[in-house]
Image (cartoon, rainbow, N blue to C red):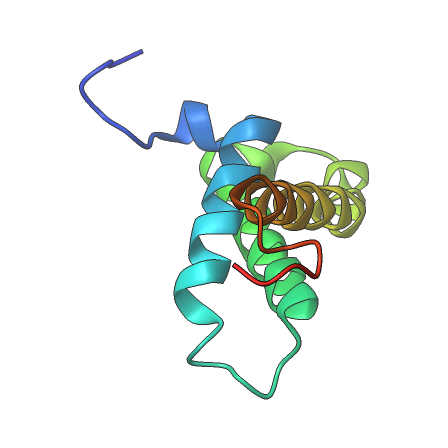
Length: 100
């Protein structure tokens, strides 16, 4: 593993790596796609990232069951990244309805 790179296929192939990347991309793109709910945007991003990562790490040689799990794993990744963002907002003090 190369410690000089922030993002690699090895890191993106982990749950934490893909969840972090999904969260970052969702926050960067949510203002561009204002009509699409943020939760759907994060799910779409998670699906795309998981498809690309699975293909890049040898997924083409895997059985169809690996590909069948991508939408389910994307739901978990999306929920985790959305939850992590909400936890950060609450920790700042303005996500619980209070005025900051």
